[in-house]
Length: 404
Length: 198
View 1 (cartoon, each protein chain N blue to C red):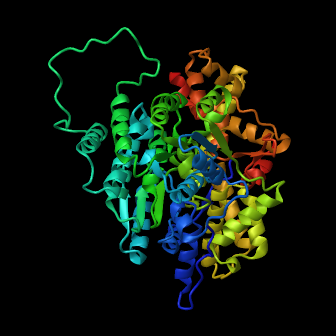
View 2 (view 1 turned 90 degrees about the vertical axis):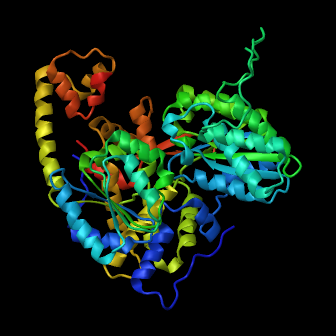
C-alpha cells in the first residue's frame, strides 16, 4: 500500500518546492488522496485491516470505531474500503453523513436516507438502464423521500382508512424510517445477483455532540440496516467511550479504539510517526534531529505531526533555508503551543496542571471531556488497554510557566 | 495568564499566505474588533498583488462562508472575515468541516474572543490549523489590558463574597447562586454567561 514520496525535479524553483512540501504535509489533506497518492503508513495493529478481515468472513457484521481527533479514523475506514474492493461478492459504500446533512440536526431516517442514496447511485453506475420497474420505483421513492418532491412518485393514498392490528411488533421502526428500509430492501433484492453483500462505511457521526441523538440513530437506522443484512462500520463519537454512554457500544458486535500513539514510552510508536513523515516527503527535507523533535512534540497525534511539520516548512522557506532544522521546528512548536493554550478557562488550566504534574485526570464533566476532544489532554493506552494521561507536549512549558 | 499568539505585521502574514497557496493551508490572523475592518482591507491589498485570483469573503454567518466556499474552485485562495462568528457558528463549521476542505490557502481573520470560541467548540476544525495563528501587533497587549482589568474585578468579587471561582460555578450549575447582580457579572467575567440561563 505504501509508495515513495514525490521527489523534487531539477526545474522546480524554491517557492514551488516549498508549496509542494506544504501541500504534502497538510493536516487537512483529504485522507483518500493520501491513500491513493502514497503517504499512508500502516500501523502494526491496523484497525482497518482487522475490521476488513472480520467483514470478509461475516459481511453482515457491525463494527464501531472510536478515537480522538486526528487519530486516523477516516483513514482506517478508507483502508477497509480499499481491502473490500478486492472481494468479489462484497461492495463497500463509503458515506460521509456530514456532507449531505447537518449532523447538528440528526434524526432517525437520515442515515438510512443517505445509505439509500449511495445504493441508488451505485446501482445507476453499475447497471445503467437495466433496472427493473420495481427497482426504479424504489429508487425514485427513496430520492423523493430523501431530497424532497413536488409530485410524489408513489401511488396516491388509498380511499379507505387502515386500522392497525392489536399486535405491536417489537422490531417496528419509526414511521420516518420504515419507508427507507422498504426501498433499500427492494434495491438489495435487485442487486443480489451482482453483489450478494453490501457493507456501509459511515463517517462523520463522531462529530455529533448529542449522544442521545446518536443513540436514536443507532436504535433506528443502524438496526434497520443490520436487519436488511447490510454490514456496518461506523465512526462514533468519543464521548460514547465514557460513563453511561458506553452501553451504546454494545449495539455493535465489535468496537475498536484508535488511540493516539504513545511517543513517551513506545519506541515503535515513534518509529511509526517517523515513517509517516518520511513517507509524505523525501527524507532529506528534515534534519534527523528535527524529525525527532517533531515526533516528540506531536504527542502521538498524526494530524498534529503534519501540522507542526507544515508550519516548520513555512518557517524554513521564510528564512531562506532549504533543509528544515530544529530551529524551524521549535518556532513551529512554540506557535502551536500558543494556539493550543487559547480559550482555556482558569478551572481548565487547574485540571491541566494536575495532569502535567501528577498525571491525574478524572473526566467527570463536559469541560473535562472537552480537554480530551481538543487534545489539550492526550490519552494513551497500554497493551492491557489501561489509560494514561498527559498534556499535549506543546503546552507543557507554557503550563509550567504559569505554575503558581 | 495565557501566553498569547505571536504578533505579526499584516505584510508578514500576507507573505505566509502567499507561500502557502496551493498547499491546503489554513492560517488565522487575530485583531481587535476596532481594527478588523482596516486590517482586513490592508491584507486584501497585500494579497491581491501576489494572488490576483484571491476572493475576499466578508461573511456575517458561517452558512454564508459555506456557500462562498462551494461557489469557488477549491484552489482559489480565500480571505475570510470571520469576526462575527460565535460559538454556534464555529460548531456548525466543525460539523461541516468536510465542506471546507480545499487545496487553496484559506486565511481567516477574526477576533480573540471569536477564536477562543473556535478553540472550545470546533475541535475537528482547529486540528487543521496547526500553529499558523498570529495576531495583529497590539491586539494581545489590548487583550492583556482587558484581562488585567478583568482579573482585578474578579479579585474584588472574591474578596466581597468570600467565595472562589469554582464555588460560584458549582452554585450556578446547581442553580443555587444568589440573585445579586454581582454574581451575574462574575459568571460573565469567567466566560460562563451561559450559566445565567441554566
